[in-house]
Length: 311
Image (cartoon, rainbow, N blue to C red):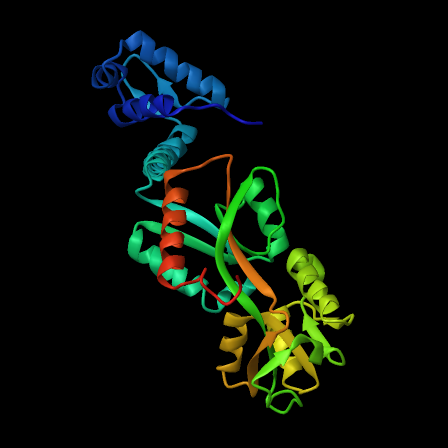
């Protein structure tokens, strides 16, 4: 059963509990003594227990009253903090931004963006969470997230988005692979290879784009969809030298530079675009979210994220 007790009742109680005198407490609160007595009775009725022992000589706290005297200041402080944070959040001065990002954004995007946000909005707290692209729009729609970074996200009513980073899909393969010596790899040269991708439900549009490009190059790809955690699973399997991973260039380059005996090669004829979008809910646009979007746009411009080889 919920109990409706507002901050005013708690303040009335605290005044009486601290003064142990209804007359002095009423003067302190600038209310009449009968009104104060009525409010305290209302509070006791709501709680279902007496808070004071009243006599003609003095007022004493009951055991329940002593408990409330300990807890009421904490409740009022928490409420005041919540009100202050809400005001600051609404003004865009200080807030917590819940940011969900696809694991692919870990490499070359999320760190750069978080650094830019820290510099531009030092009062923001960024709660960044790895979430697969397919889940992000719905999480934004229901209010679990404030900002999302998703790979080729699908449209959802109530969620807006714009392209943040465009790059080519690259081939990631072992240095021992037969194609490792080629400076660039035509997509058709992968027709006899097993391609490592993450499962389609995690980013359907991105997955379908790769399959469509393979069909354009004249073959139906043999795909191995590695399971969770996909990034680590992909790197471990590629080191065996018999498969080829297709991934956004920033991720592929990071993996190849990590000392994992892997190399990265451009895929051509055709190039396959990998498009990372920034998303937000249209249901509750806030000053803070607007600030994050503006910073992300400046970040994209500064680092030329939208000037890649894919037109």
